[in-house]
Image (tube, rainbow, N blue to C red):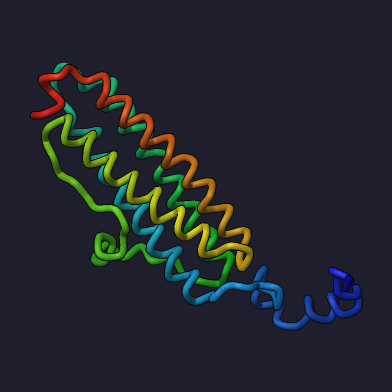
Length: 182
């Protein structure tokens, strides 16, 4: 069985070489350019989700809207935190976060929604969460051991997206029957 750790002298020499790369060392095992592209797509997804939830928060109306709007606002804040985590990881890897509003919806995995009906808002948010869950699961698997830090970022986002989907499903289940099909 081979030693798992390079000798300390070699590690120190490698660390001094290419210091401008920050945390990206010779041990980094993923396709950095593709990882940065995927992270920027996730950033766009999180920004679009933040905007969708904010829009739904401000436009939710009707008899059942108060608790639903509160959930929208909470989710909007969490999606913004996700965007911040993703942008931070992009910078750590030496990339540039892409906040260009002209291309956000094209790069985002989930779509924007301008529904006015409360039930439709919940459904569209649930669809978007399910899209994020599917794509983030795939990304985490794709990253594997090549970039464990970025994989963990996606795993953390995934856990919260699953929680959001569960919250939204619960909101739909609590809606009166006549409102679920409107």
